Image (tube, rainbow, N blue to C red; front, side, top):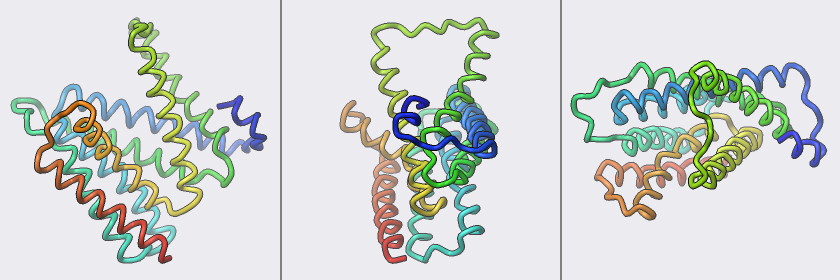
Length: 236
């Protein structure tokens, strides 16, 4: 991203923006570790929706307080989107496992404050803050690998998939930054929180997984939510 920033001539951010980007990266790591740990030791049907709803709700509250009422249509869309996140994240095959709700709370708070911090970046600054965010996220990950003496080499057969995931993650973060600069923080955060819907749809289309009724209702609600938010935003 440093090369991209230099190539496109993006101005160097000030110390405050660089510090904010570093803090955002730390929040992102905390959120991701909380989410993945919860998914590993707890129930996905508890951890995933708790993380998703909190991660979206925190910037929604900040957006409503800082920017005011976005319109009834948009608020209805936000509520439906949060309901969709809960429904598509549900899993029924988890009997006997601990809830892991504490990890979901950590994940949601970390990712929620990441969303808020990113929304505070100055306009027209994307590549430099993104480079700092990714650098900040690497520090604790490298520390875990080194101190935990864990293997770090990626098996060659899965390397293309790992690189694709890294690229998509980078692109997603960059587009989210642009979205917060182009519009309202609460709307951008809500729409980005609908990623579980995409996961379910891809699992059905590519892996031929069966979709449950809760997932199907969640997908429909997500579509309605997006239409309401888009229509309400265009009317503002």
